[in-house]
Length: 122
View 1 (tube, rainbow, N blue to C red):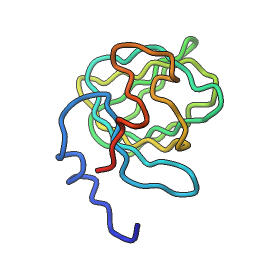
View 2: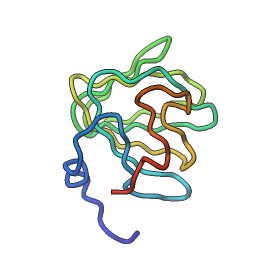
View 3: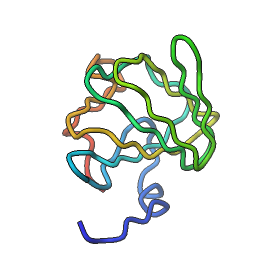
View 4: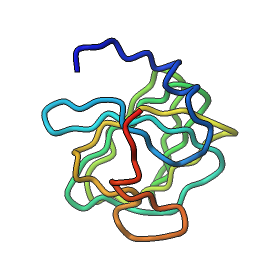
């Protein structure tokens, strides 16, 4: 990949929520974007940290013992193994950095889980 990635254009290419799209790869890490609306399920990633960068809106990362609210331009590293539940207020867009093998919703299942194969490149 040697092209400039325009985040605004990529975000405008889809409107569904909590369905990550892959926009780049670096050193085994996928760079993904997603829109969020409402609350996602509780889950954790036992073997991987997950980086959230809020691009638009307000993203709240609920954890069992606290929550972190992100405004556009703010970033948070969710440590591996920490159970969390992202919540968009009311709608948010996020850039995720996570290892390529990271399973959406920690692979714990659920109606909104998106397999790695379904997380298409855009």
